[in-house]
Length: 349
Image (cartoon, rainbow, N blue to C red):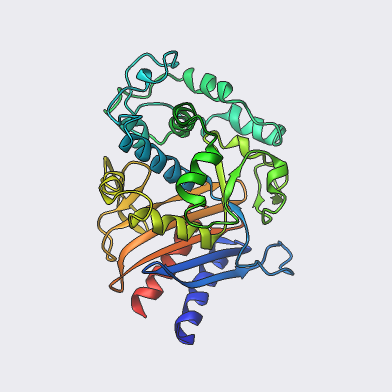
């Protein structure tokens, strides 16, 4: 890479971090499947004394949904699941009687509620960050709300839906989430720093992530926030390995392209959400159908301490490019802002 381009990329990221008051970020760019740049920017501490390494580990939060969705597609291809069958066909005592298909759950058009806006959830995270609710408690809190709309007749983001898919996959495959993601993603791609976090003991190597969810002051959540608070399970990864996974998924290295096309086909359109121009929600992927960089597909993630993004740009400066970004403080989609800041520089280089 030319020094001028690398300097411009660093400047764009630094400007985004400064505006959002983020201590640091790890970024990774690969073009046509080959690593172009892996970089740690800024600092891993609030006092700005320790540089953030390029291989820093983060919870990827909701980008995990893309991995779960890909596994559902794999099981559908194998004939163990049907995307248009109701969940009740596989889960006899499912807590909702109204038929809801797997396709509707994957695309957040099921009507299943969420817990993200519930005061009880946020209070529990604040008071007992190391003791998450079991799945039954997530279901109970959500079920009190009932369906938000008739399945297929609306759109509402639902972590509960992906908790359902996680548990269904464990039932159908007879494997843990770690095992079925190992099989589809981690082992074939040779990833050594990516895994499913199940306990605080698993995540002693997480980079510090700063949050105000516990009180008024920014605090490091990395050894306090139990991964079980992410109801559908959460993967730990680095920017470089996250970019590798998203590239391999979108380009058909792991799944047949016919399945990827289904995942990237918008089921519901959400309109402009800058920097994305026209967001569509597919099956475990968000897609920008009006991007100047041809089709953009991927997912973002956010939670205490981190903001994450991993997107594949099908023609960025004429070449397929995957960008992953992870910041060490949560923000309003600041991970997406960092990824797009990189994209704009590469498009003009």
